[in-house]
Length: 354
Image (cartoon, rainbow, N blue to C red; front, side):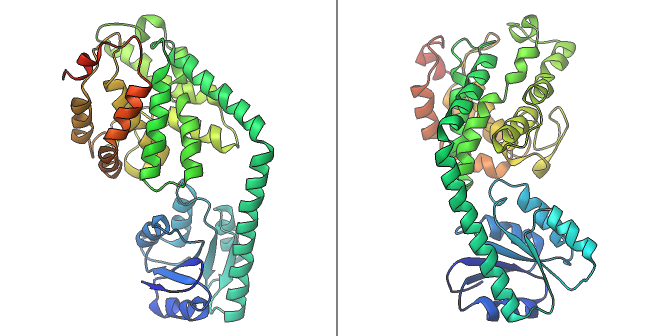
């Protein structure tokens, strides 16, 4: 439910009277959307149009405001939305917790209309100024960024050359990741960043011996354990950094072999505990690997590959992302044909199921 106005404000509170009060305060100037629990709040934050700011109650059943904020800031789709906590508590330690989680301010209940309006205006203005400043900084550092990105891209292709001499896999896979992220309503800037980070997903192959990486036959259990180390090796090579690009690259390298059912590696993460970027990369990596010739297999047909992805929905892959991926298969086919491997078998092999 919403009240019409200008920019969108999401109010999250389990007490309807509190929501009604904030709608009355903000409704003349803003479009007010509201949710009464944490799960609905997360869905509302991802909906289009996204809220420009979130007023979030701390004390709620099932999922409290701190947990909601933590999840918002861990999600590519919502991490940049300013959060102001609402609380009836006076303990400054609670405010410290919220601010560490990424909130920009606290409002104390009962909310005074003038204070609410002023705080909302201030933080919306700061947010918009930050976006404008970020745009200017990006323009001034574009050349340096392009150089850095090209180095990362080349390093990703260097890792891929270990078992694919064209290095085209990382280009296709990164383009698939970008398109799937956009289909999942990830903001374009974050989807583009994901495309730049994805080529590093298999950089850990640099640390895998050739006799295992290039083995044409089935791996032994011990060889498979060595092969699986490439995820952790990749994360170690990329390292821990503050920059968004390398954070994404490390997350993807470490988690693109995790499974939705928790049976993946190296950490055995399950469901939404797997970073969103890792879940996207998992689908795109497997799809391109299946439709590519490798020393140990022929290329699968497009239909066989997508059928496998669908069959693994809810097991290996995030079911919501699988549903989106199926809708973009024609676009993936075009990317595959544009960036094909010259060493692949003839197109006939791609049309033949394994």
